[in-house]
Amino acid sequence: MIAMDIERQKAAPVYEALERFRKQRVVPFDVPGHKRGRGNPELVKLLGEQCVSLDVNSMKPLDNLCHPVSVIYDAEQLAADAFGAAHAYFMVGGTTSAVQSMILTACKAGDKIILPRNVHKSVINALVLCGAEPVYVNPDVDNHIGIALGMETSLVEKAMNENPGAVAVLVNNPTYYGICSDIRSIVKLAHDRGMLVLADEAHGTHLYFNENLPVSAMEAGADMAAVSMHKSGGSLTQSSLLLLNSTVNTRYVEQIINLTQTTSASYLLLSSLDISRRNLALRGRESFEKVSAMAEYARKEINSIGGYYAYGKDIVNGGSIYDFDVTKLSVYTRDMGLTGIEVYDLLRDEYDIQIEFGDIGNILAYISIGDRIQDIERLVGALEDIKRLYSRKSSKLHNAEYIAPIVAATPQKAFYSEKELVPIRETAGEICGEFVMCYPPGIPILAPGEQITEEIIDYILYAKEKGCSMQGPEDPDISKLNVLI
Image (cartoon, rainbow, N blue to C red):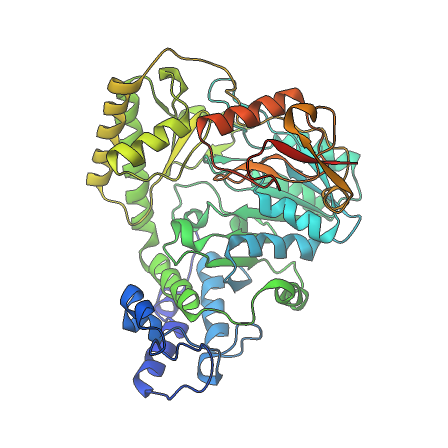
C-alpha cells in the first residue's frame, strides 16, 4: 500500500477549476456546438443541465490535456503520488489507449516483447500498429475450471534467455479472473537484462489502496502500468491512468500518447478521474476492505449452494497462481451442466441482474465500491434459483477458455497481408488474418498470424452456439474467416 500526503490528496484541481468556471457564466463562442446544452435540449433532458454545461472545450483556465501546465498537470501529479508512481497521465481513450501507449513507447518495428497470450486485444492491436514481434509465454490452464493462469517465472526466464534482445515484458496484474503472476520476480529478471516491464492493470486499480491485496505494479518496480480507473476505481467509463516509474523518459511517453489520444479531451472524464483519485486516496483502504469482505461472503454463500465453484485464495499455488485478487467473484458453472454464458443470460433475462461476463465455463460478478450487501444477497439467491430450476447433467465439452496458439507470422504482417474469406470449417491449417474473440473478456481466441486448428474452429462455433458475443471477424456471422493467401 502506498504512503501518501493525505492533506495534499484532499485537493481536486480539475474539479475545482470546473466549479470556478461554472460560476463565471462565460458566453461560449467555441466548441462543442451544443453551447452548454442550449442547442440540444434532448441531451440536457437525458444527462442533466449541470452535466452538459460542463462538457466544455480546453481553455486557459481549464488547461489542455495534450500539454498540461496548470490544473491538469497538478491533478496528474496528485494521481502519481496517490499511486506511488513518478508520473501519471490522464487517459480519456480507455485503458486501451494506456496499454497501447506503453507498448508503442517500449517497442518499434522488429523488436521482441515477451508476454502471455491471454492478453486483452488492445495489446495485440498495439503490435499490429508498431510491428513488434510477440514472444508468448503460454500460461498453464487449470484442468477443472478451464481458465488461463499466470506466467510461471521459470518460463519467463527461459523466454528471456532465448530472446536476449527482447526489449520488454508485459504482465497481466491481475487477469480478468483475478489470477496474479509473481510480478516482483519478473521485474527483477527483466531489469537484470535491461528490459522494461509493462503491467496491464485494467483490473487492478484497487491493488494500490489496500495492503491485504496482491502487490501493485508500481510497488513491484514495473516501469509502466495501465490502470482502469473506471473499473474498480469509480470514475466514468473510458477514463484511465498511465503510470510511470522514474526509469522511463517522460517526454518521449508524452509524444507517444499524443500520437493517438484525442485533442478534444472530455472534462467530464477528466474531472471524474480527479474526483475518483481523491476518493481512493482518502477512503480507498476501508472501501476495498469492505469490497473484499463482500466478495468473500459471496464466495462462501455460493459454494454452499452446490454445483458452483467460486474460487479464491484456495487456488494459489505459488507459481502459475502466485496470488489471487479476492475482490474478484469468479464462479465456475459447468459442474451443474450450464455454461457461464447461459447463467449470465438467465441472470439478466429472468432476474434483472447484470454481471460482468459469462464465458464457456465461468461467470464474473464485478464487486466494487458501489455495491451493497443486499445486492450480494440478491445475486446469491438468483444463483440458487438457477441451480434448482435449470441445472442438468454436466458436460466437459470445450471446457478450456484458452487454447495455446501456433504463431506463424507477426500480427502486423498478417493483418496487412492479402487475405481471402473462407468458410470456417475449411480453414484448418490456414493462417488467420483477423481477430476472433468473445467480448468480454476481449482475449482473442485467434489473432492475426496464428494458425487455425480444428480445436479452435470447434471452440469458436461452440461459443457462438451458446450465445457468447463474438467480435473481430469481417464476416459478422462468423461463418467465414479471413485467411492469408
